Length: 134
Length: 385
Ligand SMILES: [Zn+2]
Image 1: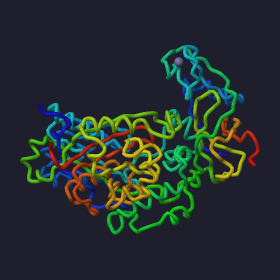
Image 2: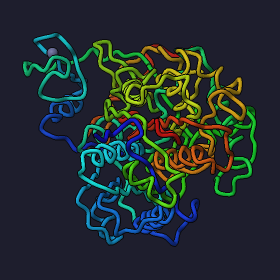
Image 3: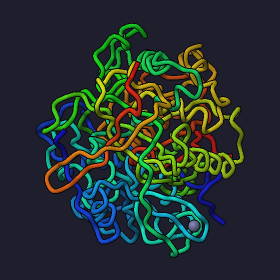
Image 4: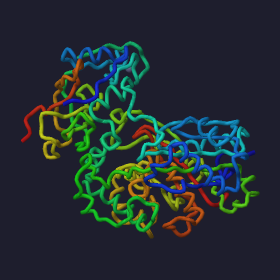
């Protein structure tokens, strides 16, 4: 799906470089163990700056969403704008793709798997149902 | 000693723009000016009496210079649509501290016609630009709405709960010529509309309008000497807070802690309890917000908001009349609705509302800003304790 592209900052560049390499990267605090998102050079939970990048497993749960029937150009089809929770803990906004955008296909709690959508020079992390919808 | 709370500070002038709705002939800045001049006339004051200015949208000095005001106190706090609630709170503190005598708070937005407005959309290098906008979380209807399904499902609510909010609020706007949506509707009709961003149909989303409003604040002492002193509305208490500036980073998508914190401080500083509140304005850019607010402020328990609305408690004759101008869903929404929520509270307390509730002594105004980012709360009264 087309759409806006990000403008990375030095703090977020490793995230977008990871996405381009097919990796969903999040940071983990080595002081308290917290995985967190979005990227920043210190732990938002305990304040430690002992943080490291990790490659997330890519599995997530559908927490909430809307099916946007009035997307901005260049998107033309209804788009699932979704809040998901990674198995490591952090929540992020994303799109659910690879499934007809209908409420019956999108029960909350649905298990998802990350995939990447090429958009210009960027790979955008999006999610698809981990099992085919029944 | 003058306090910012407890009724020592008063709203002595309050007015909206002469017209609201679709105003393609008026720039954003002149919406501020029209509202400001109306509010000053309401107070029996002129720009020469004003020494404090607060606004959001344009810079405070853009508005003060445009009006011919030389300020000795400025507040440009910008937290989205509830900025004006914070301005009232900050102005009260400034007046109590002697940093200003007469503060003008203005709002004007050409939200529909976009005359004299800056471009839209987040900075693409901000966290919101990089991690939300790329997914189409751009417009309010595709961003502010995202947590709603989670809220509903957690409580065993269906889409009907959103439609019931729409229907309850429409009743207040019926026949009001200033309201954008003013004909009665039904739960079935609202549910059958095509979705804008499922589960939200058109009438579950606010109207989009041009307009503005302004407030004039001064000390209760000075208010007593003004010609409209008997119409003064007093600030009993207030609160403000903020959480994540991104919807996806809410600590809990099923409630908003900033509502809890700001409202608790407002009630505590006013020295009142929930049962003392006669009237509620609950900022409703979308139909899920009054449900969050009723629960997060504590007017009802968790999971009780749907039935409270559906059973008519927020309607005419109900025990907590809510959004009595019809709200952002029916009355008007320029983009930053908080000013209109305060205006309706002031009208109700003065006994001058279109759909007047009998015997309103205390009104509670709950605002939200930048989607689920910021919150402001005011406790207003027509009596000085
Ligand atoms: Zn930590």
